[in-house]
Length: 70
Image 1 (cartoon, one colour):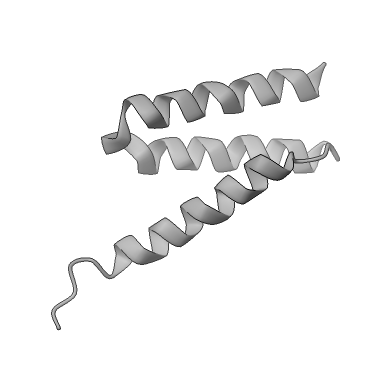
Image 2 (image 1 turned 180 degrees about the horizontal axis):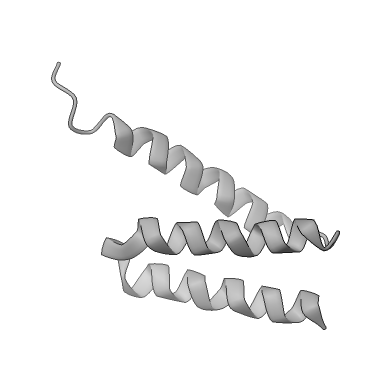
């Protein structure tokens, strides 16, 4: 049952990211925590969640350079 509860929690976080993009960084942290919970319990992380995690990491790296002078 833990797997289903964690997946449901991840789905809620993803919905919140869509609704509140301005809070994306806070919500991404919560998402990482849920993924870490799955891993710590030895549960599989769904491929779509892994892909999303990688995309969010790439977005974070891109955002880091948005305000750098050229």
